Amino acid sequence: MKKTTVLLFAICLLFGCGRAEKEVTVLYWNIQNGMWHDQEANYDNFVAYVRDIDPDICIWCEAESRYVTDTCVKMQMPEDQYLPWNWDLLAERYGHKYTLICGKRDTFPQVITSKYPLRIVKRITGNGEDIIVVHGAGWAKVDIGGEELNIVTLHTWPQKFAYRAEDEKADAAAQGGDRFRAKEVQYICEETIGTVPGAEKQLWLMTGDFNALSPVDNFHYGKDLEDPCFLTHGYVRNNTPYIDLVEKFHPGEFCRSTLSGRRIDIVYATPALEEKALSAEPLYDGFAKSYRDPRKIHGFCHPSDHYPILVRFRLGSK
Image (cartoon, rainbow, N blue to C red):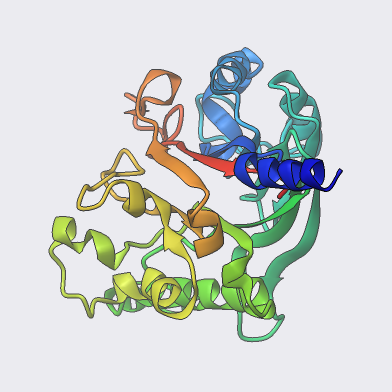
């Protein structure tokens, strides 16, 4: 009897009895004005693209309908806006049961959809005083087979001047927008991962449209490293445990995330999650292949001015 027990224990150690790890895929994408490109087609092409990838979790930036298809005419009535109010119906079409609006202060929210149960921990819009998170940010938790994944979503202020700058031209010249973004991201980090001691040993993912350049890409940009354009990601890299996953899997390679040629969409992970990462790939082809609207409508692109990023992990109960 004792020999049998010892043998079973040895087998469990060798083959990991009790583990139910599986590959989990996360798709992040800034879909430009709630997938403006495909809303007239009932989102059929968008849904087919997502179904083909079959991600377990999706993180959508700019997840609200804002304009009439193929125009820059803003939707005036709430009933004209299919998103974000019907994300549950849209997500169901590509196989996701769970949906939540993660960060929403204005008309540029982030939304998470998932095959796994998820819940909101905190929606972040600022402190009501000196800090404003213009497009909002959010902190959610996803239960994946007994393991808890923290997801922080964000979309920072996009302009060269700071939000509510009195003299926009002068403020842009002083790179007020870069300084404002850095304050947004610092506040978001302090309100999320910064509230949890030992978070580096937990599973945390932070992603979004940072509208800021990373100093790790300066071999491509060739700027002064003291340039304020690097303040946002400089803060993340120097003051949090986050690791840039695309950088990890593509060292020394510049992987643009927008048609304009910048890398401003970044997926960060804590060391504990980074150890479980299998790949992190920007997607440039097929439906995601970006091109400018020939009529130059408000600078819009099809299907978006950003590219998706697909990350694969090995997750599950221990």
